[in-house]
Image 1 (cartoon, helix red, strand yellow):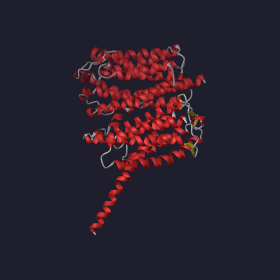
Image 2 (cartoon, rainbow over the protein chains, first blue to last red):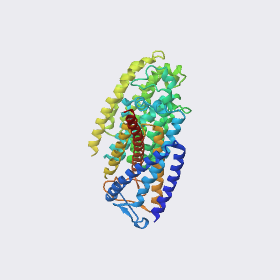
Image 3 (cartoon, rainbow over the protein chains, first blue to last red):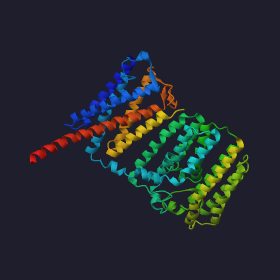
Length: 403
Length: 118
C-alpha cells in the first residue's frame, strides 16, 4: 500500500498545481479544450506506459518491493506506475499554458525570435578550429593512464571539446564586446562579434551546457578531481568575467590562459587516478610554460585595440618587444624542461623549435608594429596542429614502450 | 556494461524533438517556457523517485541492457534521462492534441459556411 499512498500524495500535489495553473493560464472558453487535450494525451500515455513499462520491467531494469504495491497489474506494470504520467499530464500542460499565455499577453513574444541565431553564433564564438586544444590534453592524459575507452573518457572528451569552449569563449566575448568592436580581427576565424541582445542568453547557454557535465564528471572521482574541475571552471570564468577580469591583469592573464589548456589534462589525470611522478610534473610544467608563451605572444597583436579600449594585458603593460622575448624564452625553457623527462619525453623538446622560429623575427618588434605579429599568430593556429601530430607520435611510442 | 537502454532513451528524446521541430509544438514554439516546464517536470518526478527509494519501494534491477552506473543508491544514471523523455513525450502529446482540437471546429465551421454559400 505504501506506493499507493506515495502516488496519491504526488498526484494530489500535481492536480492542485495543474488546476491553479489552468485557472490562471488558460483563457476563458478554452478550458474545455485544455482538459480535453489533457485527456487525449493521458490516453496515449497510458497505452505507452502499459506497453513500455512492461518491457522495462521484463528487461529487469527495475522492480518493486512486493509488500509495498497493491499487486494489480496491467501487463507487468503495477497500476501505481500509471500515476507518473497522470501527474505529469495533469500539471505540466497547465504550467505551459500559464507561461506561454503570460508571455503572449505581455507582448514579449519576440523573445524567441531574438534568440534566433544564438546557437550558430555561440558555435562560431567558441572557435571550432581550437576545440581540439582542450579536448586533446584531456583525452590523451586520461587514455594514456587508463589505457581504455570508457564512458567517462567519452563524456569528458565531449565536454572539453564543445561545452567547455562554448563557456570559455562565450563568456569572453560577452565581456569583451567593447574592445572587440574596435578590433577588425574579430568576427572570423579568430572569434565573432556578439550582438548585445545575445549576451544574456549566451551566458545562460554556457551555464546550461557546462554545469550538467561538471556534475556528472565530479561523480566519477574524489577530492583531487573536484579540485581540478573547480580550478578549471574557475579559470574559465575568472579570465573574462566582470569584476575578476584576470585577462586584464598582467602575468595573471597568461597564467589563467595556460590553465585553460593544462587543466583539462590535469582533470584527465585525476579521473584516471594517475600517480604523481617527477616526470609527469615536469611534463605538465613544460606544457604550462608553452601555454603561457602562446598567450603572451597572442596578446602582442592586440596591444593597440586593447589600449584604446582601456584593457590591460601582459603585452600592454610590459610592451610588445619584451613580451615577444618573454614568449620565446618560455618556449625555450619548456623545450629544455622536456629533456629532463623520461624517454620518449625528450623528443618533445623539438616541438619548441618551430614556435621559436615562428616568433623570433619579431624579436625587435615595437608597440606600433605589434599588429604585424598577427601573421605569425595565424601560422600559430596551424603550428598547433603540427605539434599535436608530433605529440601523438610520441604518445604512441610511449604506449608501445610501456605495453 | 550495456548501453541499450540509455541509447534507446536518447533516441526516443531525439524523436520527440524531431516531432517538436516539425510541428513547432514545444521548444520550437517557446524555448524558455519549454525549458522551465521540462526542468520543473523532471525535478518533480525525480523527487518522487527519491521518495520511493527512501521508502524502500523502488529497487534497481540487474538488467543487462542498463549501464549499471548509479547517481545515488538505487538511482541509475538512466532515470533522469527517462524522466526528460517522459516530460517531452507528455508535452508533445498535449500540444499536439491541442493543435488537433483547434483544427476540428475550424474545419467544421468552414464546411458549414461552404454549405450556406451553396
